[in-house]
Length: 106
Image 1: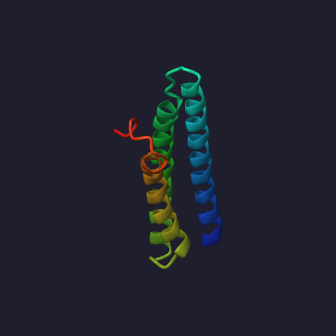
Image 2: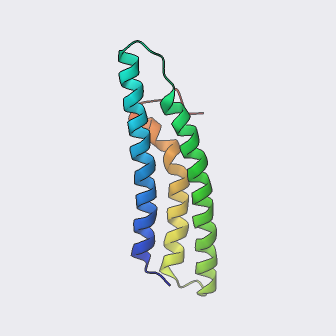
């Protein structure tokens, strides 16, 4: 079994990739708005990020449950993977609120 720290690092890196991508999309939208265009790159990127994060989060939660159950409910890696999967699935829906973009939240 892998150590819990490897799983935490992996889930953290996935969340960082999603966050950086959304911030870059917001930056592009801001520059395009200043130039007089009406872009929707952030909203489009957000829909893709939400779909991908839900899928990856579901996979992490299911693998975490299997690992945790196979270890007779003693594996910290399985528990960490379950919690990380839930947080990964919620992350893209929360970040627009903190970035101040409320028009894309459904």
